[in-house]
Image (cartoon, rainbow, N blue to C red):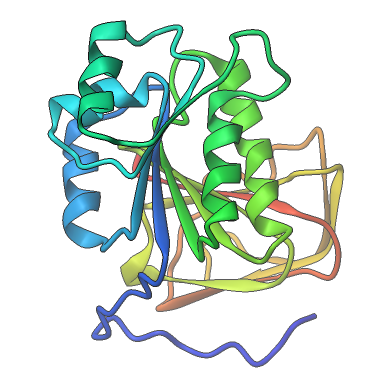
Length: 232
């Protein structure tokens, strides 16, 4: 198991915002969350994917790129941004990638060091699951990538890590195996610790744990975890 974790104190509020990208995509976007993120993070690039353009326009957010097939965006709105000379990349409706994937690949092409996705959850569960799978694109390049909504922070981990209690997104942490199983899983600092288990698909064992210590440690030797920090 990986060792040598270091503690991240709550007094250190600095965030590494070097080439941090925000993607607004077509699911549910809560304006309160988006406003808070815009205040907290110094995004170097903001990309609207299709329907994400609507809320970006409503909130007067300056965009660096707009991408999508625009099946849910009016021509008049697109025309407004063409007049502003905002780069717009248009794709056919019948394509092999979602607008969200196109936006992620654009961010990676511009050497993003971290990517936040807002609007990647909502009523279309097929898109939600696909977006969780798209987190692999960042993980494979060792780039932090997060799906954020008003209640959840979702990300993938393929190596041991810690969560600092004062920085967690909500009161609950859930761990699920992404690709079948996670081997030699040990978690410390949680209400329900685990010691050297194999977490397999088809089990709800990793749902709704709580952090009890300043730092909670998650250690494993093989596999990928879906980590969900939830507020309710």
